[in-house]
Structures are given as structure tokens and as C-alpha cells.
Length: 212
Image 1 (cartoon, rainbow, N blue to C red):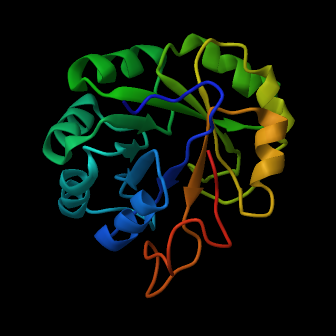
Image 2 (cartoon, helix red, strand yellow):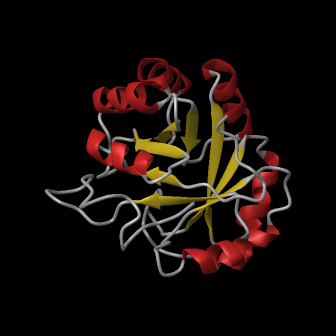
């Protein structure tokens, strides 16, 4: 029902922090809604709000929780309490840990890589997850920077795993990014704010986005 067709890019809106933005993303045709559950992010979504969003929309879209170096227990508890269908691991998690997350939660797993070179992408071949996500490398930052990378590096991805592209995508460059990288799905994260981090300034898909 929510799979990614090989020839059709799908959009995952990430950094959702309130039900209004979630509703707008769904109405805009989102494939998935991403809630950052890592405490170190300024766009962290509270578990209570994430559960509300999941309850409202999980029949129609994928519900993703984004983690950075969590424990297995933390992921399993969040997946159960919120109702996640996707788990995105954006830290130093290894292949065995990713496999355990899938086994314990029943969720599909996205393993993210911060890309500096083709070697970073090729290293993903050890991860037999459901999706690989390619994001920009910024020293000292786990992800979500809005910085682009050389999208054609994604062509070094040789694993038989769908690719999700992230990093500085916006309405003006997303078509070029898809053409260069040929990903399975772009991710859009709201960059326009009202009232502080985590609040969109209108419907998703506005002027400033990142994509995966």
C-alpha cells in the first residue's frame, strides 16, 4: 500500500512537529511523515504529539521516527507508543543493530549516511535495510542541515536497496537532484518557521525544503 514504486519518486516530509503541518503534508501528497525523536535536534517532536499525528494519519501515510544513536529499548518503546511504521537511524548504528530494530519493532528501517565521498555511499552495502538515505556531511551535525552535496555521487550506490535523497533540496533544484541522483524518494523538511523551530509557515512544499 505504501511501497515506493521504482519509477515514481515519493516525498517524505521530515521535521514535522505539530498536527497542522502533518495535515498539510498529507494533503500535499506525502508518502511519509517524519518526526525527529532525537533530543539533540531543535526540530524534535514530543512523543505525545508524534502519537497524535500517527493516530490521525497512519492509515494513509508512513509514520517515521528519526533517531540518532538510540538504544534498542528506546526505539522499541517509541515505535510501540507512537505507532511508527518506519524507523530512520541517522547516527553510528551498525548493521546488526539495524537488523535488531527491524526484528523488535516490525518497522521498516531507513539507514542514513552523511556523504562526503563515494566511499560513504558504498559503505551502505553492509546495511540490508529497507531504504538507504543519503544526506550531506556537515562536521559535528547529525543531519538536517539543508546543505546540498554532489548528487551524482548517489550513482555510486550499488546496493539493491531503494535510495532516499536528502540535503538542501528546494522547489528550484529538486528536479535537477532527482535527475542527477535518481533516488526512489525525496524528503522535504520545512525551513520556513513561525514562532520558532519546528513550526511550518504554511503548507509543506514551500520555498525552502530539503529532500530525501
